[in-house]
Image (cartoon, rainbow, N blue to C red):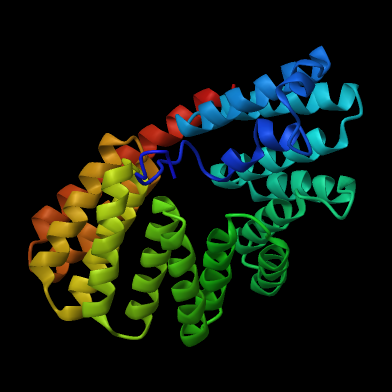
Length: 319
């Protein structure tokens, strides 16, 4: 919370817990910070720049900054700094969709960790997310539970959200709901708006899995309100897709189409082209089901052009 009591606005994803406070261990004073070596100060600066690039959606630029931080920490054998840089690299690679590279980075970080360590909860949390991205739900649940058990600070709601997400993926909605409700209370108590929205979105998905479209819509609307307040475009699009699913489950075809069209506009204007392509495929299906094949064909053609254009950009970026 800020001094004014307003809900705090996150600048980035999990990277925020891995900035200067973690690098300067033990709650050092200002004098201790000034006495850090030049190499370490430069590494901290690169780490912070990496976080800023990640916020902007510049994954490659973020990786370059995190890699330089890793190099500098390695040059002075600062083990905690190396672990932090590797966690940031692993997260960024995972979000890019490069799960093998993410796994390599996180396994290296695990091999360096000197337990007990305040970095263990975040390290295990990211390892769980990588296993989840790879579809290894058993390993994901194990590491997520370890992260939650070790959490001593304000991130417990975030850890518990992940446990609930994995339980839902395992086909255990009742247990997932217990975790999501616990996480929701933790996040509300700490006024962590982004994580509160994550809890509500998870509850919405659980209600959908149980056929409770009314409860699901209420949760997605709650998440949407928070995400709009925080300006989180990709989450807003996800909330709208959730509302579209709830409308479909209710039998409201027109309402579902409207929500998906709104999600498409958000994704396109936010340059989230992968999500936009997925929404366009869903919209084309809805138009076909609604007896509008020409609209469906038009959406399909636009989606193909979008995907081809995105792939062309990726090919250029790789050279």
